[in-house]
Amino acid sequence: MAQHNQNKQSTLFENIERVNGNEMIERLGNQKTNFNKKYRSGNLPKAEYIFSRNNLTIISFNGLDYYVKNNRVVGIQGLELSDEVLNQITEKLVTLDSVQHSNSEKANFEYYNANVDIQKIRNIDRQFMASLKMLASTTRDIAALTKTENPSLNVENNIAKMRLPNVDKAYENQISQTLVQLNK
Image 1 (cartoon, rainbow, N blue to C red):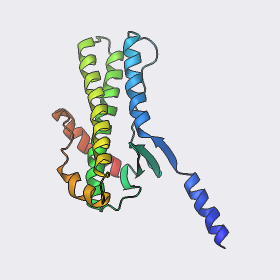
Image 2: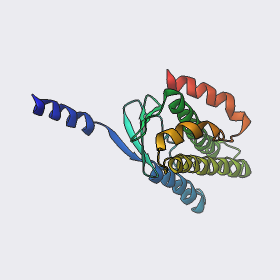
Image 3: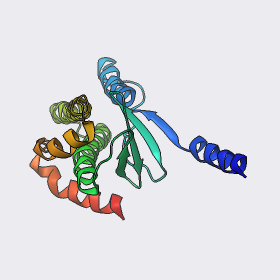
């Protein structure tokens, strides 16, 4: 009976997707940079969400494993966090993820526009890269909060003090709608 439960548990963990979040951020940034260096020749970089996951996925950032399911952070390995704190972490990370995805899609759409505005594309690309940097910085800050004697308590006490991502006001309504859609 114990072996049956062990086999069941190992099968459960084999079905969990693992993603290296740091590498994904770097890859998304490099794809955009390389596309721009080649004077916009070749295939457009594909817009990808990092946190939009329906099935349980472990996304690793800076040594922390974030458990993501149904587009929200449901836990961080080794930490006991309240639902309120997990919701705050989800809001920060999903907001930045939505902004980077939206900017990637907008830049790609502009390339197909008959009247391509290179300056507009450059501005969108800057916002895309800034959102990736903010995402990396936010996950790095969360990891830094765990480097104490009582990491769960430190994260609980300090996550609310972290500033919300400073994103363009034009995206606020879109992001709110995206969060509602992702939570449905």
